[in-house]
Image (cartoon, rainbow, N blue to C red; front, side, top):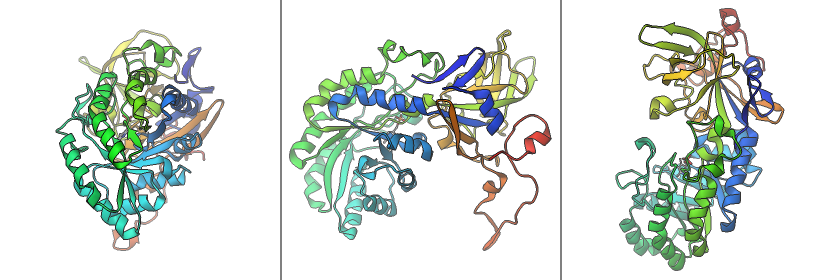
Length: 456
Ligand SMILES: *Cc1c(COP(=O)(O)O)cnc(C)c1O
């Protein structure tokens, strides 16, 4: 259950007025609710409590240090896919011994870093990778804990770009290959098989594909346990969230009401009978579920463009800030930060980036939106900022974390200087300092206000 609500006509994030955050920090602005993240984490933990689960938050969903710290301080582990993410969890005080390292293309350097850090387990996606980890571990005089990622070949009703558990995908190892690997495993002297992992995709809302994948893989898990002393079964992430009704679903009952959905409660209810008897530690790797509906993107309307065929609402956030609609055609609820009444109208909500794909909503029936108005784009906590870029040389937005009545900046807005950091015009020489006013924050509509320095 999330903590974004209207109080009267003003949108609140926990106990903080969203409009005041936009005033203080500028737009576009990511705003996260700490209470929502913690609530989602605790509900998942509670629903799986009989399995003594290890929850490994998938860092790639949102890798801000403050969110990592928030979860780490509650005992959450992490699911990593790069050396950079390992660096982040170490910086945030996360525990590598409660973290797994997945991904189809780990470099030798990343393997070394994870081994040195004391990772709980690598998740190995192929035979050659297993050989590479074995070599790296031999060189360091260590034994690398590994889990094999099985591709269970189940289709899940989700977007093609986030489907990972089908035979044609690049992820995981087929059941036949796993059996061959089991025979070879004793030859790999510097790895020990600690577990089996599956991850079938993302934004999966029915529980059936999860159940089917677990069912298919259990025989391989039992062999890993009995023959190799494996201690865990990692059932991956991928639990979907409500995008279509993100705002309404703040209703405390929604987890329970959506019985057909893969809510944590329903997911647990269906999987417990399969997983309990294995007697293994169960690892889950939720990303979106924990943070997706814990974040919104605040944006200000710059202009209206009304054509006979179509109306456009042009906002100051773009696809570089939130790429999901452009990349996946995904739906995000868009609501006014201050409700003013008036008739709904139909419009495209578009950003300033020079791409036709820079569109947050097409032909959306929405509340009236005029230049200067603030809009909140919902469900932006996962795969929002973490996929943001500086495309069109747009400084990335600031991020703010709200806890009750308190709020703090957890990532400052990037400056123009940040855009050229590390670049050089001539060999060895950095670009000359720019002495003009450089700031990407839109605090209002006049040029003077746009250029004003952001308050710290
Ligand atoms: C992306 C990913 C996750 C998290 O997926 P969500 O849909 O955000 O829960 C978990 N595990 C692995 C291996 C991933 O690649």
